[in-house]
Length: 125
Image (cartoon, rainbow, N blue to C red):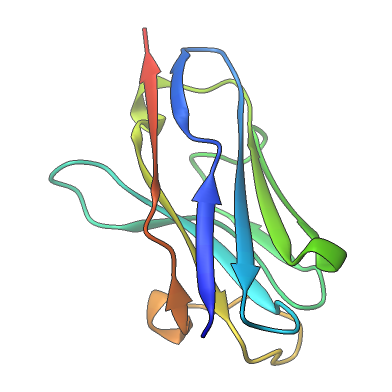
């Protein structure tokens, strides 16, 4: 059974940094992984994603501040978040697409096969 466990969330002051981890188990490899977030009363939105070929994409709101990376040996994907802003406050979820495809991350959330339960990130002013 495939499971995704997010960790690394917490409370941080604006301008600070956090690194989120998404550890996958029950699968021999991870292909595409996406980080999504959902703030209260808001829709879930893509933050960053990385394809099986290492190709990445980011939401415009986090470009230059967040970096997604992967450690295939550990079946783990990271989201380094720098220069955090209050508007980054949300529950962050990781999602896994088992289909390697052509190396690109999925275009839509519906293409992901498994989701984690999320980790809370709160940025205070």
